[in-house]
Amino acid sequence: MDGIVEHVYAEPSVPPVIAITEVGHLNSSELLDCGMAIENTSNRPVLKIFNQHGGTVEEEDPSRKENGKKYLILRNKKTNKVLVYGTKVTYLKKPDYFKMKTFEDQSLTDKNQELSTVFGTKKASRISKSRVNNAVGVSANVFDNISFSSDVMQPSFSQTNEFLVYLPLGCNRFSNKLETVYPVSTLLLENEVDLMTDYAKEVISMLPISSDNEDLSKFFITNLNRLSHKTIQNICLLTFADGLIELLKLKSTDLNYRNLEVYPNSEVINDKVLDNFVEYTVTGRDLTSKMKDKSVCHIIIIMLLINMYSFDLSWISPFLPTSSQKRLMLLLKVVGATLAKDDPTKYTLKMPLATLPAFQKLSKKSRK
Image (cartoon, rainbow, N blue to C red; front, side, top):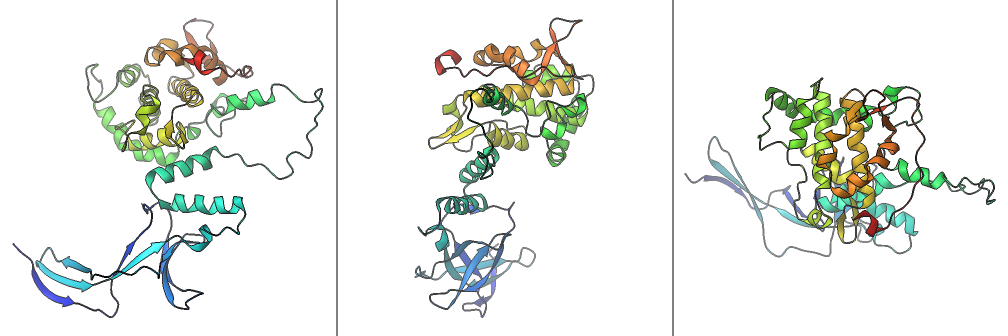
């Protein structure tokens, strides 16, 4: 049944505004405000969108006008009556301070980064967040107290830091308590576990899971069935490890398909994997050797946590690509896992952890 037009407001006193943007979409995770402000040059009110810090992320472009007339049609589903409103069309643009050349390079970079995070495409937002996550803050006087004497400098300093990048952010490898070395919160945040709770409960309701289940991977089914404590937290962690296993199966070229889903079973894990275990370059996503090693280290840590700090190497080795299997012994040392005395096939965490091994950067040929 067609709707009946109840009233037409061709030129309402306060017309609805249709805003057309230069880039992407509004990011709902950011706090944004909308309002009118007086433009300095023309001294006329313009529409602006502000972020939570009061900075302008988009503003009306007075130079662009809409020739045609656009209408907003609203239908009441209950009465099937229709209201028609004439609208004002506004084109938004980046504020001028994003384009000015007078700003310092670093300041300009910060503003562009803020724009991409708040108001940009998913790809631009993900790249921007990745750069923020990987950035290392350094004070201006960081070199003041450095001695350039070869006798004073420790040759293993830079190598140790290279391996620390493979471990979860916030872990404490030098702790004297087993529980505080790799807290669960360094792998999955509390709100991430909350978002995955319904999925974990669904998995629990399926127990025991048959090996021919097509919705779950062999890695997930095999390790879930042998878990002694099938808690929601452990299932969430195992899901994280499963997402990393699926990532390692891909090639860098596979990562640049549009609307890629590395792990369709969980949106939380899919986003986490793409945000933290893939590097972004000018040519797109790249699964580098460093990211592969980082993924394997996280898988090892997860397997230790969900299996009471002891697991068999055969539980993960068959599911890893050949290049990662060759690095497995070294990455076990990076995590701090050592062979169990009572079972030579099992690895465990013992306090204190062994020191990090010496870092040796391998060529691309040796990783193939």
